[in-house]
Image (cartoon, rainbow, N blue to C red; front, side, top):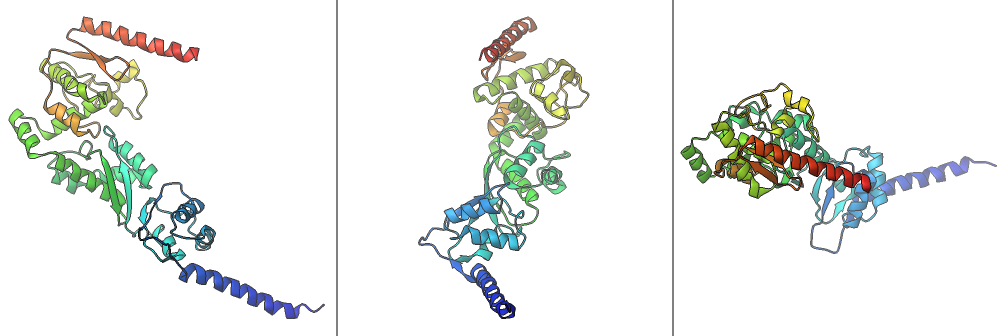
Length: 344
């Protein structure tokens, strides 16, 4: 049998299929019957197949397999950049692929940064959710120009990156710096003329205010207690007592722990308030507005000690003897919790 005659028809068919595929992928536009431009969220860890499914579900494209094939042919399987993308009507598969893989394309992302996170924790959060480089984020927090703009004498912007929910629009290659600038600008806005005036009236420096606020933030998320805890710490400072604040030890340690040991309280660091008197050199996290206001407006009382109840609130004491009784109550609570776990 002579196969020579079959060779060219097969070559023709193959060429036609390739031409049809690339024509469809590069030139065919995806139109949908809607005037609304859908927003598709690509998160860190999404692969080409996951992204294609999301795009198809939102009618950005109409054949996810075509999108997957094009991405694999062009080598874009692992190049997807997290973000919230708004797609206009009538885009080709190549247009869409370029949008989700080109670092220079402006993209949007809504991210909530919880109160009380330090810079390293923020960096890890942004790396998980937005694909940012956590190490680079920490380095950008040492941005001298921003530090000077805030009028600070500090090594970094710990404490001055305001926690909130943001919609970031990333349009450049240095996304880490973009985020730092947005958070620092938000902090500056929160420091209103009224707050500044009260700081001047009380003679409180910005660094001291935010450092105290960060300790309060580290101690409790329960807002009604924040001004009480602020009062405790100011009372201790007035009496020349050490603050002995556990969150400062957590910050000093190479890695935070779920529960501190007595040996941890001896960890040598200028941030360890079990060893130093007064405030540490700077903030230990980035506090929210309620903690800042509590540090500015502490409750007046005679408490010098407090210990957790176990329900998010605390017991307070004016004397160490009373404080020891409260510690026993907390220890009893912990034992009861352990017993409940064992009995489950």
